[in-house]
Amino acid sequence: MGIGELLRSAAFRLAVAFAVVVTLSTTIVFGFVYWHVANADMMRARISLADEVTTASVEPATQLMPELQRRLTRDLRQIEYVGLFDANGKHIYGNVQTLPPIPLDGVYHTIWTTALDGTGQESAFFVGRPRPGGGALVLGRSLYEIHALQQSVVRALAIGIGPTILVALLAGIVLSLRATRRLNAIHLAIDRVIEGNLHERLPSHRIPDGIDEVVRSVNRMLDEITRLMNQLKQVGDNIAHDLRTPLTVAHIRLQRALEEPEDQLRATTRQIVDDLNRAVTTVTALLRISEIESGLQRGAFAQIDLTKLCRDVFDFYAPLAEAKSIKMTLRAQNRVPLVGDADLLREALMNLLDNAIKFTPRGGVVQMAVENSAQGPRVEIRDNGPGVLPNERDRIFKRFFRSAATNHAPGNGLGLSMAATIVEMHGLSLRLGEATDGACFEISASQKSTIENTKRSHEIERRASLHNA
Image: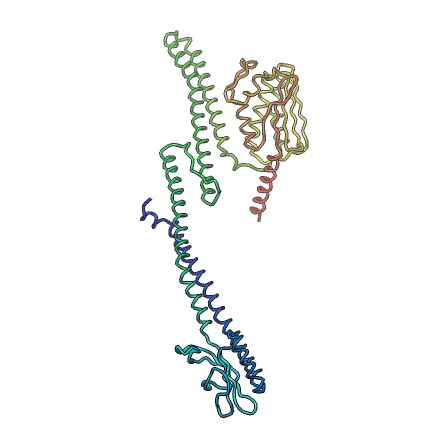
């Protein structure tokens, strides 16, 4: 990565902004410290001197001079200048030889005066008061230490601000380099996806952050795209596989028909039409499964009564069962609410009930039950047909699977696959239940799907209330 690219990167600009903010913050903090140190110390010294002058100015001279002597020798940090004068302004005691040019009002005044060591002028503040019976007392303190402390604070600011800016910039450069490398890795991964490698995924960080949230969302989107692409490929493969056989058979029959007498052409044509109809039915079923798996039907979800749906399907197949002398029974609760697509669920139930009647022998029994169990909606369809072989239980819901026990019956092996897809789309599960005689298919809900169904129900009610409002 070049310097120019680094300087143009958003991360580096952010680092510079961060350095400016840190510098301003540090300056404000130092400024506050400077102001506090300069004013607090000076104010304390001024008040102290004013009190000292007020107290000492009324003391007798014989008592005052020893006290001033003691303060000058032991308390230099508070009092550095002392001047005691008589009523004529004549110097009596102290290191101030002449009255300083300040009013004797007990208030501090800052003036330039000769330094105690005689090396030049220095800034100091003095407080003076007249004494009873004439004369005056003047106390003062040099501002040298206060100014030195202020200068120390300013130097500390000048020394500290440079490294602070440097450290902030270095930290910004390091962070910008890391961020830029990471974005480059993501960019390269996106390029590989664009080139057709749909198995490529964007790199994520071990410690999740805002970028990782986007990366994970994009990866989930790629997973979904890959799944849909595989599904589309599988559907295409299935269609090609299922079309090849009837088309080959039709082609052979047409070739043979060219050599047959004309009176047999009608029968041959009818066989070819039946083959093509079977192929069209299979392709339609495959496309239907693909459409359901893609979730395009979820927008039609609404509140439905599963009991009413089961009754409709039961009534529809009752004549067919009666024609085969099959006894059909329905055990249903008054109402089993569910959020879903009524047409799709009807299609799933019809597939299951159609299979049960198809494979149940004449005089057999088909039982249908629907209830609202503790886990949620539950539908059971049980028959006393040939059942499912133990070694086929894991494959019964796969596409084009035909059981060896029922392979003689017409069908394309897609009915159970379609029913399972529809049921799963509604957050339910279709499984093969236990049955001592025949087969038992059970649609049931887990606790999680029950919660999701409740949420969907509340959402539909909320939309309905908004629409009515």
